[in-house]
Image: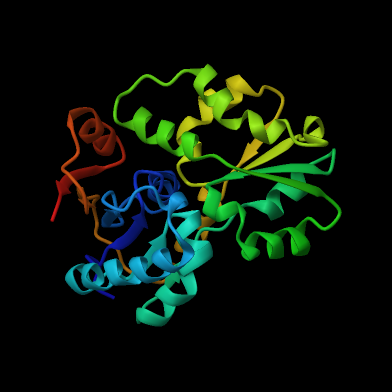
Length: 263
């Protein structure tokens, strides 16, 4: 394995940074390419057929260009819909992102769990399967919040996001039957941990869990015998849409992404 071969992270926007961050903590010298389909954002409002076709078509030329050692689909919606298709299309390891229902079940005392994601993610049979396998004795209440995705993108772009706005975007989850018993909420969209502070302020006493740290550990395991550069290097961020503005550039730099490119 070429030590310069990067890890390639893919998301519809900036949510995948919440997977990149714990990965950098474990693999600080790993070269990084972060690929955001900002022209296709948001994925939660797209059809399953569109996402299943779009994601592998976008990834193939980027893989050919950068020759990554591993691809991370750092997006719950893309993973629950297109992961199998991407794995069939690419001849290298592909790590997906799935809702952290198993750890939520292990944490819950009330046995009532919330799953907060995009509209597309929360309706997937994949989520039904996870709930049946790992939380069969729990009531699992789901809510798709496109507003929360937009708020997360706005926050990283430098827009002030209020706790009230976050509470309003999530409140339908807690209006469902038995929802007052929810003691753990799965953040089933990689964008949502970007709003961790606001979510905890809006819903005190409710534990939050997401898949980012577990995915980082999986990446570290899959690359455990591979060589890395001796020092960290500036990460590359690719956007399919317009060039990011100033505040977002500063946010990307905080995640080690200093070389920002558009088509």
